[in-house]
Image 1: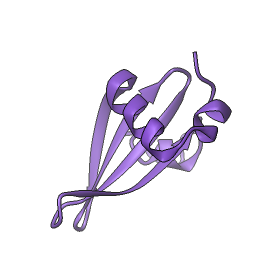
Image 2: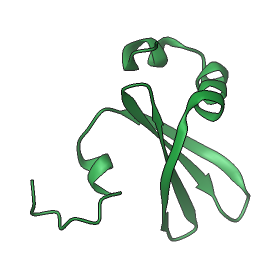
Image 3: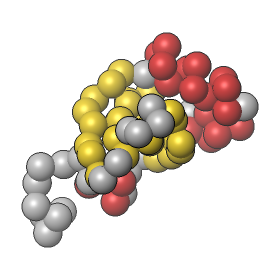
Length: 80
């Protein structure tokens, strides 16, 4: 099992391989020409950002909780 710390120590290529092979796709959100896909991996989350026009991955962010996770919630932001 990988921790978030272990994941961040991996190379970019290893991180992407692990997300796409072992991660569970949860949902996505759209913002302008970007698509953000959320994956669960072990006990943390990984957000993959795609540029819709070029159909390429442009960013990856890994996290456990916080504002990033709230972006995928249907709950009002004022609810804790």
